[in-house]
Image (cartoon, rainbow, N blue to C red):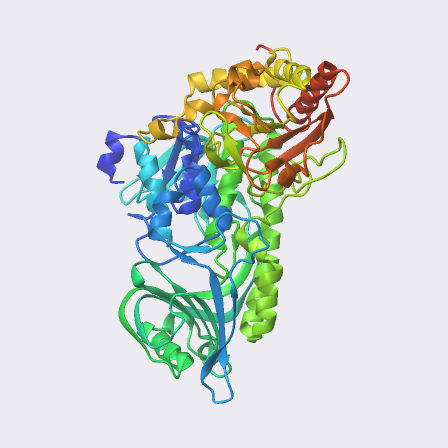
Length: 628
């Protein structure tokens, strides 16, 4: 942003809730998570957020380009995936090639990218480069009146302690810029200035392997141009090939042998990379008709010594937290899910609904995932360089759930509480992501995915699975009354959240008229109440349900699809049993409870309500407002 624009729209005249440094996918998703009408991220949540970036424009070519199934699901929850699916290329299989006795490469194996045993709605790698992702987020932000302030470089910050504001120093081309904010997040890449100012450092190692990357239009006789391809050549090194949008190809070429002979990384040229690629691909010809982007990178695995400061006021996310090789398409995905984890916690902290422990859980949870990412990437890169195709394929299969994003799990903590009531059945586990489950939405009989139907609103989703709406009616009535009572912790939290969203409402966009987020916030700004029951006859009417679900008509579902949701998620709901599932705002399973509605259903319903109170008012870090 020019000095003239700054004068017209000064950043320095207000205290911001959150300042985000870096407008890559991680920074933009974090900002969006807090600013939108369906409250998917900070802008959606209604938080006053500013995004600054040292670049003059978004990414136009190159950089990251692979989106895994869990990331696609996240974009679906944000109601943004459709635009990206139209542009990207779907990769369903991997082809393995290596040099034979003649020194020429030959195909030795092929396998599905994702095994059919993995239960997911989008079993493919979506090749859609970083610029598409940034453009998707930028357009959604612009609809809500938020722009990235560009040509501003981070210099430093100061923070006294406690609740005192953070003063952020930036610089433009002509003058320093100072911002005041409650929270600061560095999404500013591998060489993060925020990380350095925070006193953290990257820990790990880099290796002598240098790789060249080419994006462009390739003319070749090679037969597997439209699949992911891994090539190992005993003499000339390894290569990876990915199909790209608009008929383009991305090619990674190993250059470690040249490095050992003397040239530094800076001395490698595009022509050297092309020549090495031609040697690897023999006997097939390759000719570049057009090169859109050329880059070099050095393989290494590093993780930051801290993801947040001791006051839980300054955070880092994405490549500032962890760096790895790009060969398994992990970096952009994990970066965005760092922000996904942090955004809803920041939203509740800004609104005064969270104790410090909630924000402290960001480092705890995302470090677990980053540690596993670095371990996997080291193994994957090592087998890749060794050229053992069998070991590489076995390593890929062993880690495939993690690669997809669905295996990024959290250990038990105050947000992920293992089930203690009744027998543990089904596939849901605290700290894991729910598997896909199809149901019929009661109000329009549309078949939907239960884990995706409710848009991301910064709310906890509370699913009650009952054998019918009639048999356990005293239970459901007592549970509904407890959850909505202003004398219960849940009711007090609802009161406080609703007051906060009244004074600091989410920012709306024209597209919200089609998403209709208000359908899911009829009762509470913090909870969405859902009911899953067997199919009912024509006489069934949602208006006859207890208030928690009568007033949440759009989240009443019939478990009437093949592969029952109750069976998949819970191993079934037995006669007289009611199960309660809490999904966190980021989609992870928070906890699962089972209750016996036979006998005194009123007492059991109150017991279920008190169990929920314990989750939300325990160590979890929510501030219950007695004034409500």
